[in-house]
Amino acid sequence: MEKNEKESHSLSEIGGAASFSSPPCSPNRSKADSPSSRPLFTPASPTPPSPTPSSPPPQPIPSPSPSPSPSRSPTPSPTCSSTSFSSALEDFFSCDKEERDRRSRERSRRRIQLRAAGVKKTKKRKRKSEKYRISGQYVDREAFDKYAEQIENYGGFYLKMDRPLGFLGEIIQCPIDKEVIDAAKFALDEYNKSNGLSLELKRVLRANGEAACVILYYITFEATDGSFYEAMVEVGLENDPMNLEMIRPAIYHDIL
Image 1 (cartoon, rainbow, N blue to C red):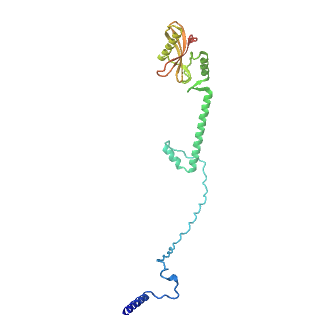
Image 2: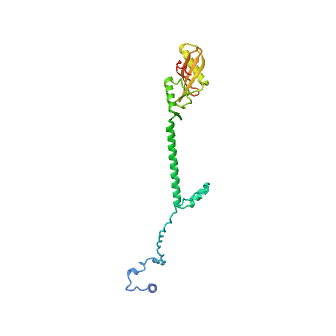
Image 3: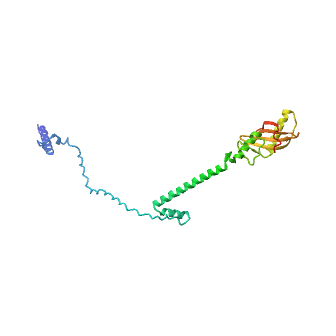
């Protein structure tokens, strides 16, 4: 029984402590105000920014009133006093923009006129001389006609011109050097083999050549029997063998 009284006394103390720690709920207090429904923290309300003084709106820049242009005097434009390039540049850039533009237009017009005059003079010179461009050189019409007539009549064996006409694709006079003499000997040896003869070369009268990928010689020579021969010999590059195109008794040996 004493034990029960001690337990009831301890419970009453605990209940008194509990009643002291928790305040009594008011009848008007809602469920939302209970400690269990309260948030752990309340967000701080953002502080409104402090008002800054607003800058005044930009004012429009007043456009300058057009000033009357000064009347230009009819005096000629200033020219460069010095002949040096630096002085000319200083004089040019010391002028205003309108003057620089006027000088530039005048210089361009003068350059076009000089170019047109040069082209006209060149055309007049060509038309006056009647020159034709053949294989990198200029020849007169008369010389070209004479050259073509000689090639047609003599087959390239006779050609007497004041100067050569070109290099590639043209028949020109050649010096009688070792290569020409060897080509003449080769042609005569082939002629001896074909006809069972033993003729030897006595002298070479003329030699013309046509240069392309190889050199084709038109050789007129005299043999030891007193006869003249005309041969076309093809000579290659370096160690390429010679090739006899044609050999015959000379038809034009008396033409010097």
